[in-house]
Image 1 (cartoon, rainbow, N blue to C red):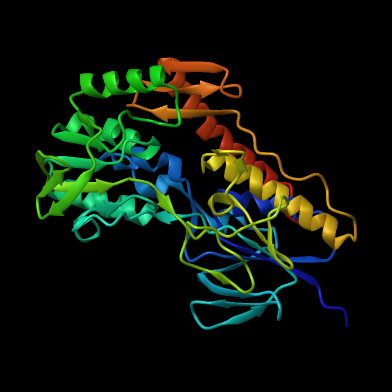
Image 2: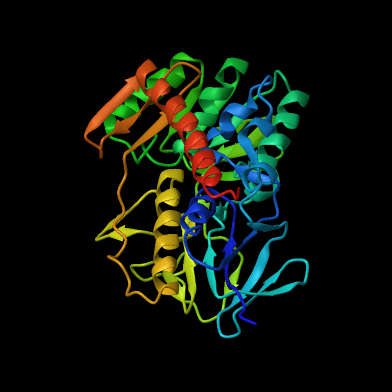
Length: 368
C-alpha cells in the first residue's frame, strides 16, 4: 500500500492560506493545516474591530467554511517542534504526526523591548483575541485616556480608529510616524490625526511604565487608562525546527526558495527578505506572495523537477487607514503616493478583493 504524500502547513494566516490552493494540483497529496484558532484572522482589518458596532468575528474567516469540501484536515493545535530528520512534528497537545513536506507560516509575535513595566501593563495587538480583550477594556473605560505606543502602520491605524473617543495619545520613539512611507505622507498622517484630536509625540521613547502612567525619555509622564502596545514585531517562539539556523533577531534563516531545513520551508512574517541593506516590510501582501511561491516550489520537488527561479520580493502598494474616511499610502511599486478619501477607498477595495479571491481559489479546489 502506497502512503500518500503529506504536506503540513503550520499556521492559517495569510501565508498558510495562500499556500493551500497552490497545493491542490499535486497528485495524491494529503494536506494538513495546524492552527489553534477557529479561522484566519485578517490582522490588517482588526483596528476597525475596536469600533463598538463592529464585531471582531467579522474579521475572522472560519476554517470550517473555508476548508469545507477541500479535503484539508484542520488540526486545532499549535506546533511546538518540527523534526525534519524523522519527518515528524509535535503539537502542543502532545501528538506526533508525520509529514513529507512542511511549511512553517506562523507569523510573528509582539516585540517587547526591555522597558521597565511595559510588558506588565501594556496590551498587545497581534490577534483577534487581543482585539476582543481591548474592546472589553475600552468598554470598561468609555471616557478614559488611551495611550498607543508605536507610530508604525498598526499604531497609526489604532490611533485613528480610537480618535473619536477622545483622550488618545500616540507615542513614537523615532522622529516621525510611518517610517515605511515617505516624509510627506507621514506629515499628512500626523496632521490628520492631530486634527482628529490625537496628541502625537515623536522622538520620545518610553522609558518606564507604571500603573496609569508612562514616563517618556527625558519626561514628561503620560497618563493612561488603556495602554495599547504596537511597537514592532519579533520572531515567533515556536515551532522549533531541528537543524535550522536563526539570525540575530531569532528568525529562521531561509535560502532563496524559502527552505530552512530538508523538506521544511518558511513563509510569511517568518521569512525575512533582504535586498542589500533593505529589509522588506512584513505585510499581509508579502505573506500571501510567500505562501503561493513556496507551494509552487513544493509542487516542483514532489514532481521530481528542479527548483524554479528564486523568490523575488515585490509590492503593489501600502495603504494605511487614518479614520473611517481618510487614508495614506502608495501604490504601483512606490511610484504613486495616495492620500485622503481615495487612499481609504483603495484599502477597503483591497480587503474585499482578498476575501473574494481566497474564497474563489478554495472553491475551485472543492471536490464535486
